[in-house]
Structures are given as structure tokens and as C-alpha cells.
Image (tube, rainbow, N blue to C red; front, side, top):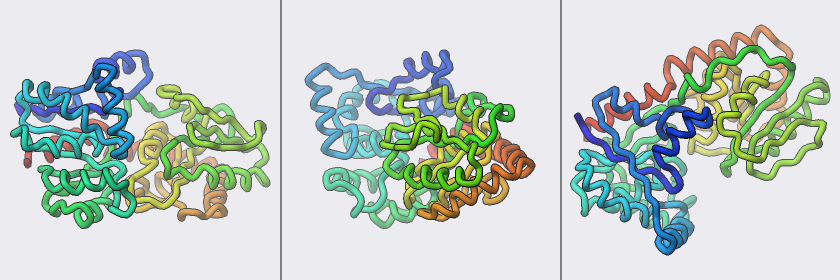
Length: 354
């Protein structure tokens, strides 16, 4: 059986994740559902780092200066990685993947790394860019869950096309079950707190909807600044974890407004909502259409268009049959194409090529 070492980012451990999963707080029983690689003949060893106080402070400083790269943690995990005698190092994103690729000279195991937020050199902090330019061409493979970023990664960071791969995102559809019809009509739900979320556009769109559909309310889960009157809806500022399922249950539609990006921002919420049997309204950024079929499982809206976003919400709230049919189609599509098990199968195929 092939052996893969998976370095986990700061603050994450597989045992703690299993415990939280047992309490119903997080999906899958391992981070990203990567334990399912075993079903494809790959034995997974997760690596996490528990640093003493001074090294932990150094690691935090390095993360801050490098845009979140886990350089100190990678060196701390090197001995553990060597003891596992891994055949390959699999990093879910660049936080652990760039440091692992930099450390290739000290380990015979090739590195396969995902890309989550890295784009072009102009949009990357200087120190992170220097390390990425050195590390990524050394990686045995670089993959992304958003296909349009791959040509950019090849062009900007010197990764040959033969080493670039698209691996669709997958979620735990046993955790995000199909929800029954909502008890209250016209509830719009949204979530997310990365820098590409356009919550101001979302609030403005819902305000337009409320001019004609006065009973429409918004439930927004985010740590980002967001402002609307108390009678407008509910702002959830703390981490909801598994309680997000309650929001999806209460929703008539789920709406994700985004600034223009090729990072794949918003895709996790998109798939969670679809798996829950809710139609999705989402900004039509590059790559989103690989997941959402416009008019079938959701509605794609041009970036920055408040009127179009509001119109999409109004149309779905006004047509019960279309909204319900779209939710059913969304649920089927996720279970056919975007489960964490399917994602693990795709990753396993990639790992076996290096």
C-alpha cells in the first residue's frame, strides 16, 4: 500500500478533528476527508505540530511575514515525516505545501500540493512570492479545486503543465443531508469570511428584494464587518460549525456574493447548500460553472451587479416549483460528482502518478 504523509496546518490535528466529528461539529472524520484515500489503496499518516512557547512564537512570526506559510512547522515535522517512511507528501494547500516542497532536498518523498489562495505574483506578498517561486517548480504535482487558476500557476510560478491537475472539491454529504422544506418562507442564507466575500452587495440585493417581498429576511454567518437593521435578519458572528446545517434548513435559497476572483472562494458553501437541497445563487466567477449548472442547480450572477443578484433572489422566492426542483437537482449533482469520497479518489489517482 502506498503511504502518504499529510502535514496539517497550524491548530489542526486529526485526533481533535475526530473528536469534534463525533460531537457533530465538523464533517468527515478527518480533515478534508482524506482518510478516504485508504479506500484507493493509500495509507494516510497525518502530521500536526505542538510547539513549545518560544518556537510557537517564532512560527507565528514567520506565518505573519510569509502570508501564512508554515515554514517552522514543516521543519518541526521533518523527523516525524521521515519516521513514517512516506512515499509521498500530500499538502491540501500552499500553507503546508510550499514549505514541504522547499524541504525536498532533505526528504526522498515527492510533494504534491494543492493551491488555495495563491494567484499571480502581483497579488502575492513579497516573501510568500519568493518562497513560492522557489518551491512550486520542485513539487511533483500542483493541484487546485478551481481549474482556471492552473494556467496562472503554470505561467506565474514556473510549474510545467504536465504537473498541474484539477481535483474537484468534495464535501461530506452524510453530514450535509437533504433538509426538509423550511418552516418560514423567504429566508435568504449566506456565509463566509474570506477577503473575496462581497457581503455589502448581498445586503444591498436583499434590501431591494424587501421592497417588494417585505417578509424576506437574511441570515448571514461571517466574521467580516456587516451591517443591517435588526428587523432585516440575523447576523451570526461566532463560529457555527455543524450548526450551519440549521441555517441551511431554515433557508429558502442560499446566496453567495463575491468579488471577482479565480481562487474558488465560496465553493464550500455552494456545495454544502446544494447538498442540503437548496438552490444556490452565486457570483459567476471563473470556475464556478464547473460546480453550478446555471438554471438547473442554481443561478450564476455577474460580479458587482446588485440588480441581477436581487432579481435572481426574487425570481426563486416567487416560484416555489422552480425553487424546489432546483434544490432537488442540486442535491443529486453533489452526490454524483462532489463528495469527499470522489475527491479522495481523484487525489489518489494523482498521487499514484508521481
